Image (cartoon, rainbow, N blue to C red; front, side, top):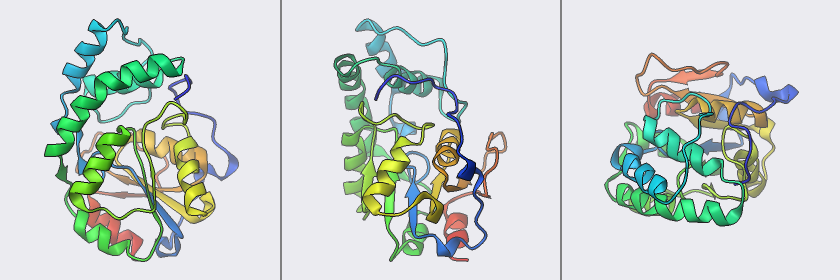
Length: 231
């Protein structure tokens, strides 16, 4: 995860892509945490942050794009994103991963998960997440999620809101951005989709204080996402 600015990256011309017939999408990319599964509520990111500070990692003043994450979560993720080299990133990530794995064991499905999975049958699906690869894999195993591509947090691939994770997933799926949809609960998900040129469905989870900008559609939960993708 090479060090990059945490604000929104430049958007290509196709970034404001809008889609009315969602059922024509050739591939669906999904955020994981609080989109499919609520991991964050079960992870003690404040404990992880304290351990990072004790290990000599300083907090960043330039917090990234606004999200619905808790303050500790946001600071931990932004600290990881900001590490300048592989060695320091690996040291920081090794501190955070055990906390995420503990949370992965207690993580709960978001409302409408089963309905969405049925709606996705027959289409290539990828998960693009800022969670660690280990926690992501554990959640996939626990819930029996069948996906064709997984791009979790890594040093090599710049993280959302940059488009790289989405583009890597689409490369694995063999689908061009113009024919894919990103579904996520975070403003960073939307920024990444815009930067990559994907249509976007924002999942509000009932919150009214979201900062989604140009989302092609908003859904309160995964039941509504499933309905949109079946239109």
